[in-house]
Length: 335
Image (tube, rainbow, N blue to C red):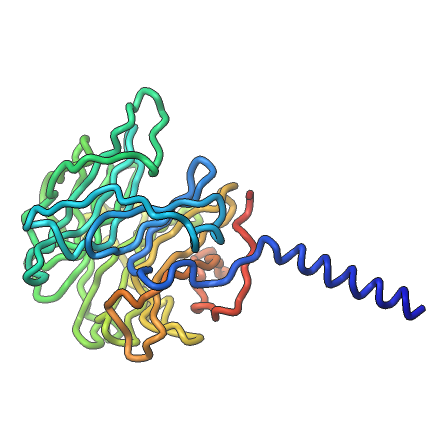
């Protein structure tokens, strides 16, 4: 009997260990994990974060693999107006190519921050281009101060670029402008769709930045970072589109009352996020940065975290709370 009990125990432990072989814990990049963006395509997860000096991309066949994945530098320059303070790169597939939108400026201060764009070099007709492509610099997309570019798509209203700007307003706000058919230039006016007017958006200094599109349950949302990053109150806010009004009209967007995701479990300043789909598209995952500094941080000590996005009973996204480093996740569905 003792032998059988021991055998059963050993087998149980073995199966548990086998089950954990596909598990991973956060963070997946530490340090240098600020402003993360992820996408899954062609059997790989791709991760981009702020490097301050160049545009880099890494890839792995599993989320766990990203922690040790090799980084590939796809663009760097010594041009003084865009050499430095390289932030928030994102890679998006539009038309037949991959494009990387990112922020850069000069070394003197942050007044020169502007959105720039790179284009993948693979021949579109080959349909072989991936985010692991070689890229060429196309240009600066606006003369206005602008950071944290991301793409917002609509069936009836086309493709837009979202970013943080000061266009006609006092504080950093969320702005959108129409993408041209080339996806490398902007057309029409800049529209301000959200300003930092609520109390949860004004800690340290009023800020709305780092917008990210979320298409969830048939509804279009924009998540964004609220408040100043050098505070522990830097968090994620959420806008909801009404489903019909022109998205350039601020009235088309309703703002959630308070943060939908904020500091917890030793993770502070949990803003600047993105979303990606599991390989079988049955799950939506949240990628974001945080810091262990209880006062908040805007520097390279921030790390990249990934966790599953949940769903409320009404079908809206449930962000939950930042998980502890000890929380083990299985790989996304479909691997």
